[in-house]
Amino acid sequence: MSSSRFWLTTLALSLLPTAAAQASPGVTVRLGYFPNLTHAPALVGLERGTFLKALNGGKGAQPVKLDARSFASGTTLSEAFAAGQLDLAYIGPGPAISAASRGVPLKFLAGAAEAGAVLVARKGSGVSSVSGLAGKVVAVPSLGNTQDITLRHLLAENKLKDRSASGNVTVVAIPPADIVAAFAGQRADAALVPEPWGAALEAQGHRVIGNEKTVWRGGKYPSAILIVSTKFAQAHPDLVTAFLGTHNNAVAFLNKSPAAAQGAINRQLTKLTGSALDLRVLQRAYTRTSFTTALNLAALQEYAALNVEAGYIRRVPDLAGLVRR
Image (cartoon, rainbow, N blue to C red; front, side, top):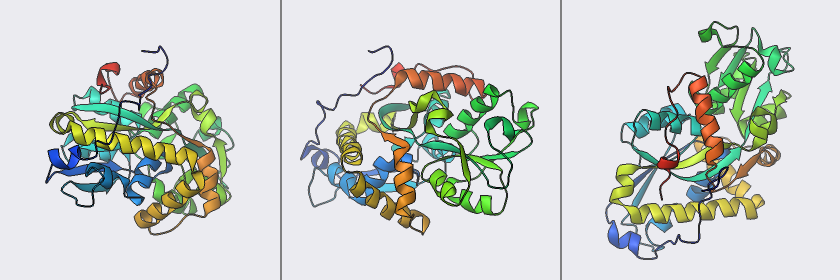
């Protein structure tokens, strides 16, 4: 294993043309994801129908069903995962690591996205830098999620703390899709949000004070990974292999055909949120997000340390042991 990155190989993966349908008839695969650009592999896989096709060995008949559920944040998704309501999920590293540290039986399957989060100050808030967040209200998708953990690290770097730690920054939870309305109602002075919601705020005249490269680690950090229930992986290794193969294909599509991918993403987001994004907004958000199947274990290890620093877990779990071989 590399000391800095663990690359999942795709050479050994195949869609097993008939195995999925033959081995697992009548199974419903339950998938969790967010309506965010960082979860674009999920969005394009659903929009193009490739997940369901792969799970059924490429056949027209569908003995294997797919139940895809959208969540507002990693915190609510991880709760559903821990309750045994999901088999596979796209999730940020923060909640995934927290769940693993609590003993939730899961495995890391692959990377999905890197970066794709920005810190935005509301116009009229008077905030122009991270240090200016003192005395302000800052929104994150949910308490304990990936952006929340990153925000607390940013605050610590600027000698600030949230009010729960006797500081003077108020951290509140607002779902990303609701953040535009929250800014309009002046319910938050700033927000650390995943794309495309940062670009949507920027298009309305709000100011990015921390881009994907300044938020953490020069932008080389995982913002979404793919996980699987250990129980499901043991019971249906064929379906896991099939899903992972089409996940890899979705990431390749995102990188090789960005224009077509953005159209698919926008159509899926429209179904989920009820309104389409301006393509110029989506294009800007796309430039701040990277898509990869790699699991960057060094970055995940650092992120786990931030999780401890934020007080959400007591110790760093064995991340290498969580990777499904």
